[in-house]
Image 1 (tube, rainbow, N blue to C red):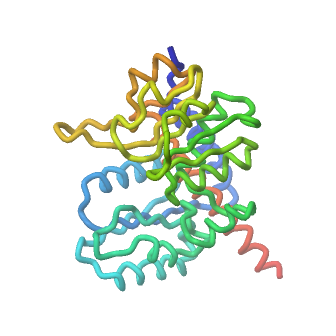
Image 2 (spheres, rainbow, N blue to C red):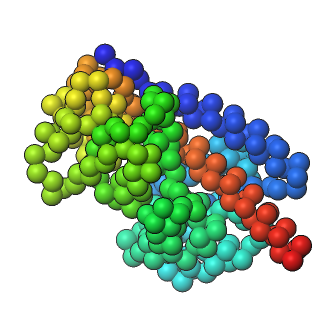
Length: 291
């Protein structure tokens, strides 16, 4: 039976470290601050934003949430982002997804200053990552890498299979794994003979957002399986992943559950990236002052 990767416990330990680092930078006059933009009335988004507010407070990071109505125009959201870009007291900006259908997420994200793009989703920051010169790295891939390194001391030479090619998870994660000297295979909706390829993986990561997509027939005995899926069961409020947990638990060497797997790590790295951006901003301002 597999080792269960307790993302909640690992994230709490990491947040304790972040809290100590925040305390230290505050003594130097740096007060990390994140702006959260929530457009519309999506219930899940409100829950996620609330968790981010709560964690920010617990580690000593200031947060302000800007809630806009579902009918908010592109101009209203754009004006808010541009205003926050100019606010020297705001170090990090997050645009919560999903947005109402009349708003284009990537277009609005690209208005965020790359120096305040806390989730690394602007085209510039994505390009820097893929060119091997990362500036801000998306939070979920960072959290997944943290979990993998908790299980494996060295990832070099391992075969990682990533299901899903989104700009938020799949593609940046594949790049991080390549940077860790893994051999990486990416699978998607057009991939053929998916179970056979999955069974070659030492590390199997599913980020497709489809309930019960990965069963035991897709898993190599002893493999590490990371489930990134967040799927709501239609008949209840229950959240499940992409992986049929009980089937895979009997075969894998290690497995992350849903919930309490990748999710807590994503929010923890949101705080870590905010801290990083605040320190960079302080150093930049200090350099300009000296100049």
